[in-house]
Image (cartoon, rainbow over all chains, first blue to last red; front, side, top):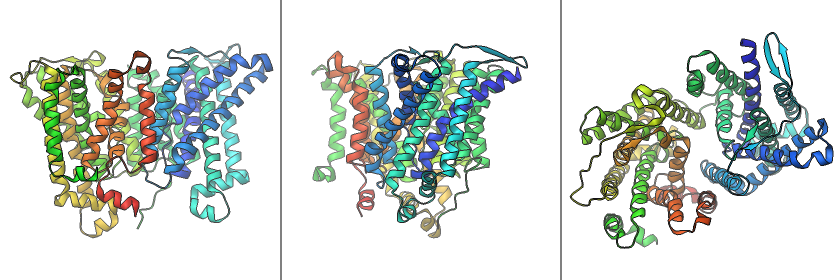
Length: 299
Length: 320
């Protein structure tokens, strides 16, 4: 039973972590909450659905098709995020802190209603990527789907880690996140790095959307909202702006949810209450999140 | 435009026009708009309330609708227990104030976006608790209330009665906000918002004033929630979702933070627009109303990031 719950928690946590990374990357550079991120992940799932219908003709239904669908959806979601930044946030960058937030809410409503009006008002069935098998490990049933989700998510996180820590562009991203003006003086083009950050964050969000679709088997125009809000909470729990914090926060939230529904009577009803209560308590003890740096009071 | 806004009788003229409106609405076949007007009024109250927290104290709150819910449910539960309706409203305001003060005492030391997330969490906790606490709130099935019709001598239509009551509450709320803004307290809030450290060094007790702004917000939400419950005679957790909190924040920011007139205009535009489209457009277009709503949010923000009617003080800051 426990092992089963741990596996379920890992799967859910991996998806939350991927989404939370998108929030935290953008926040790290622009200190803004990208409210439209949940729509980017929804669009990622819808693109994957469209590609799943198209691609088998090109790549076949095997592993190549699956990877192709995954990579193309990620690229599409990243591109959408870049476009959102270009048109809805960049003109407001130096105006005020709240203006981009409102514009982001507007974009989110537009995208959601766009899909609602022009694609589908109903849930659409998400195709199974591979024939689903079951593996028995220590009495827990693990579906091959969960292994795929976990593997892809962890792989992407490792890739992100490599990119941010060991490449020149990643270094530029870290520099911008430390101090964007000084980074500009050192010859880094901040607009380019910001666009890149939105692309990476959007691509991870798109990947999470595809995994979410696989996990639940169906997608709908408003699917992004709930995981988006929870992943954002996870990012804050870990310390927003901190990449490791987002991953940690995502897994903690995933586990909390699964354990609450599994072990507390009526837990499924109360699991979100428990998750948010834990968040509030953690923030009261550590006001800048689990791994967040203490913000010095400006003088 | 500027001149009309500055004219000292403009608010009274607007109030008079709003008061006459339901009585002529029948003549122009617009009864539907009286109902819409009532809802706009409720959101004006919510906006005026959040304006204390967001506009004056600069604290970012994403769970404000929880206090609207607490006001509505307090009224409903009190009235079902036999408390007379006017006292139920007073009780609603007191309970929301108390809950808000307790919340403020615990969380106000958080800063910026951390505060936003914690308030969002509180909003969800409040809604889910209402939804799951069947014994007190009857869960998702909601609570029914006996009708209360104090203005039946003016009109037989309950929508018109509540429209007028809400209008009265909005007028009172505007006057209270206006007096507070020009008071010693209001000046302290503005000082804190402009530069917290300078304000502290000038001897303003920052923490207490922030808590005061944060708490006062709840009075408006509690009153709005109570009126909403009595008007609808029915409350369910459905009415208090996260999206509604976002709507209130959008009203304040889009209207112009810290500007009373701005908040009123923001509520009028954002809450009035979708039903207005529904009223006038053919069925093909009705589905598009939220798409246009999103477009309005984006376009207005892009072209007037300071808000539709910003407070003159804030506008001076932004342009300097």
